[in-house]
Amino acid sequence: MAASLTNPKLTFSSPAFQSLYKRFPIRNPSFLSVGSFFIQSQTLSFLPLQPPRSPSHYRRFTARAESENGSAERRNYDFDLFTIGAGSGGVRASRFAANFGASVAVCELPFATISSETAGGFGGTCVLRGCVPKKLLVYSSKYSHEFEESGGFGWKYDVEPKHDWSIMMANKNAELQRLTGIYKNILKNAGVTLIEGRGKVLDPHTVDVDGKRYTAKHILVSVGGRPYIPDMPGSEYVIDSDAALDLPSRPKKIAIVGGGYIAVEFAGIFNGLKSEVHVFIRQKKVLRGFDEEIRDFVAEQMSLKGIEFHTEESPEAILKSSDGSLSVRTNKGTFDGFSHVMFATGRRPNTKNLGLEAVGVKMTKSGAIEVDEYSRSSVPSIWAVGDVTNRLNLTPVALMEGGALARTLFADEPTKPDYRAVPSAVFCQPPIGQVGLTEEEAIQKYGDVDVFTANFRPLKATVSGLPDRVFMKLIVCVKTNKVLGLHMCGEDAPEIVQLL
Image (cartoon, rainbow, N blue to C red; front, top):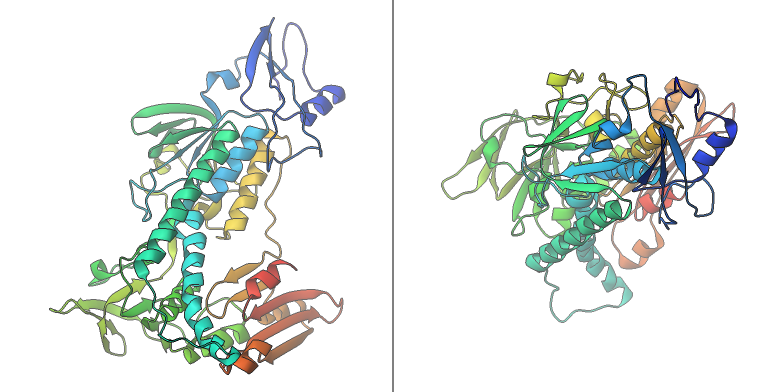
């Protein structure tokens, strides 16, 4: 709040003033000078999705004393908050901060479907190169299975349905353009200043964007992550998840290297779109960290759909033949004839060339920004949320972290993100939804647990004749009868779990 004055001796810390201050959120304030005070006011605004203080809409009047003791004041900076990166966490933090009355700017790179040092886009990974385009391709790929199912329900086709890749891609890209525009409007409507360009931190309170400098009391880094491809011979022939979402044509035969959620999701997409799919994983099973029975079940179901898993095989080189086809050489042999090789080998924080090391921000070996429980970095005025911190890399978590940061900085509500019982989904085919502990984690933490499982053939499959099944698992503490974990793999599993 305000600094105290030597003459007159006055602060705005009385209970009545604090109550008034908290009741009326504003944005885009205009300042009126009254003696040594600044009064800022805002006419009534209706703010959809605004973090409210009460159920009603209202106006706020905030008085701030002009300091005479030399401390830094808001008017000495261009902005209260400058956010680098307009992904889920950055947009949420910026919008909430503006709604709490802060002066906010966000910088982001120009839009492109594939990210680079010079391209990004408002909306970030989830909206432009992750959740949204991936789900659109999942929807497209599922139709082949639904056509197959429909025969048992009496549907007949005079000709085999054909898929037009170019139509799918054009419609997907049009939707991304629409969404990035929506994200810009959300920020503009909140009174946030939008700056297009690459941001670089020059000092704890200064950001350079393509040669123009801006100062801010607080700097938020929310630049997310980018796909990581390990260095090996032939890695120049490999595509990552960004490129896989924007291919000009359907892969005829694709090798996917990796066993995580990105790998199994794209395996399902390309399999459904009638590509021949091979998945190479270093371990015995896919989805390390998931419940063991879920791991076994999803691999079995995906194999029944024609996806071939090469377990305990580590790629050592990618080779290109004179006809343009690719080969994958592993520790066990060489596999030929691929039109595409995709690496889904994890993501790394996108902190390269941001100037963070030079100003003293501590980072991990992978480039993640180290933060405390309030998302503050080792430099007190620099904060970070989302995948760039490599805490729990999920879009809803980045949103939570962004909201918590805004409350901490501008609502006088120090708020720690809560990472307990965060649900997650994998949009493989069949999809997975889960929340809480795995059976292995529950036993280690609680000892005695009851485990309830169901493995059944859904009604739809009894008529379609297809081998689709559903697996469900509930883990309960024996002593307290408390549910510790829920895991499901089957049609609509993510939607079912997120409702719990």
